[in-house]
Length: 478
Image 1 (cartoon, one colour):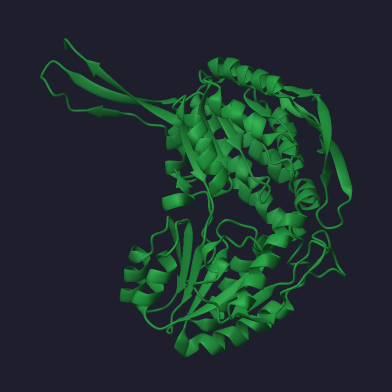
Image 2 (cartoon, helix red, strand yellow):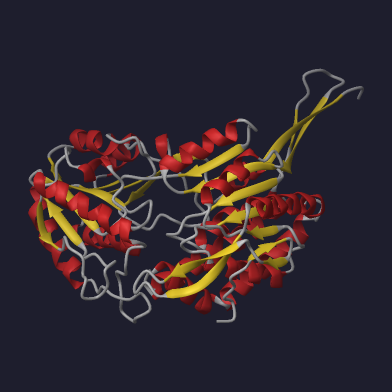
């Protein structure tokens, strides 16, 4: 593969680390590559390189930054096929999904290439007759981005594109499970014409040590992290001593509500896509499916029929819809959730076990009925292909159940009555709500949550804000 790289990318050069670590294909556990792991000292070098490059990059005109970002976008589209192959190899998701992720990720580069030219200030009426007030927006500086394994391409571009458009420089630490997609993006960034040091990719199998350096180094002015709530809280604490600006996109516990006036077939289609995309390993996957009791049985039957049609297997094989989970502990975790649900009265009507004949990390798409609030899968983010179905009676009851979680990332509901749609959409305590749709992610819209699901928004015109500082200037003697 022409874009397969194994070294870190620092200050425009490919750099050898202090040792290597293996990257494995989750489907068959075969080694794809040995990747160089950088030291904390090399991380400091990357941060300094980004700081030096910031002095150059921030002075580029918005038009010039936009031009280079568009070059990067065009290269990602041109090489989308190879980027998808690398992604599927290291992450396991079906190739069709990988291609979708690459195009989705590139769309943020395209969007923010355009937004680079729309960073506006204001002229504010003065408070005294000889005073004038103006505001301008300036890039915050060096940005550190820590990205997850479940979307190893798009979670980088969604963070990096607005930072670069704003005039910031970046250091990216991808997951040690999926570093190859990041390195492929770095190669294309090099070809696109970014000056050395503007984009830096550091690989490590010592994420705690590198993360601590990113959080404590005063040169870094902003941290953007996508991952678990537990780790996000730790990073937030570590950033406190240097008072960094922080963006966190953390865990979710998405409700998927089906009211009795819903188009059941449409709701089933939405639930399938939302629950089983990437084998259930997304932060906005449906976690708890609530169905009004009068249509419960009809929904379950149709849902089961569609689940049984899902093709499971190797992500690179044509037709595969559900691939492997990322690692052994992920499978062990959802096995415990199934075991707990059964012990508390849940009924597995399909799935519930590994498909070991295909791969030890493939878990069968699973439906659990008679789900109850006292089960662990009500409270925990499942992150696997398990669909628990709960029955409810009233609108008030399901809103209370849906909001009964410290998380608040995404929620979905299906129904037709316009007044109830407004009431429910307003009452759900989530940052994003899909109404009669599961497809809510797009560069035009703000992505992010409330409560313990995070801080800040990615995408849309609001996605620039976290990478800019607002400066107020008071003009006297006029």
